[in-house]
Image (cartoon, rainbow, N blue to C red):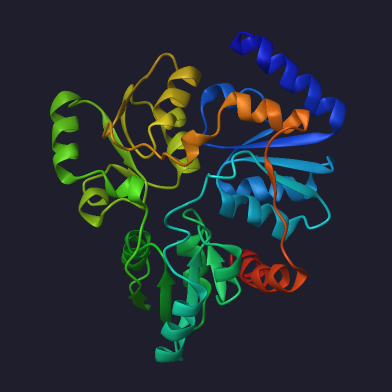
Length: 305
């Protein structure tokens, strides 16, 4: 089959079998084109909860599929590739967090949404990269234990200086690959371009950016801004997506090494096998874990109003 023929068969099967396809922004463009919703992990989970389909296919990584199951327990949830994990989400075990909490009893535990369902059961509130500043501002406790990404945490800390932060060493291996040297090279090659970076980047990199925001916010900024050239400091798939949708503008990767290998595991062929019933992994959570994990998400939604 050609790409378009395979896409057509996926579209036919998902309609026939009542499957809603979610594609994280870091998926390839051929997968974007067959998805019902594209976006950041939590936004996709919210779409899944209200979707009419009985089966949800998450084209992303494991913690994202778990979040879908937390918010939509009545639905069958599939992960497109069983090997697609998130190194950052798996950096801290539940047992280690319990020990850290015992040593910091007066701190409120704030977890980036990029964490496992099991770890969320030990957290007070979740945040996304786009909601973190507003949610933490709304927390009454002045002491914040932020996990697992200390780079995102450091960026939030600058926006919320009245809070006292503690961090656990961790972060996104993909975004950590980008350096100040990359910024210097990119600025030299594209002096007219604006630099847009994700807050998971090192503080020395975000300090040099013209705009810092979540993946969705970076895409939105690049589309709306009048500039014609942009250097993109997040997963390199976003460069291609922006090129497809904004032919009158130019987009350049901050680093050729900013590639999430876990996101790249999912192929259009995997999506086909999932909707055909011959692939994917069904995600299950016991009700005790689901409800305990959901408390931190509910707290995020309440504080972020």
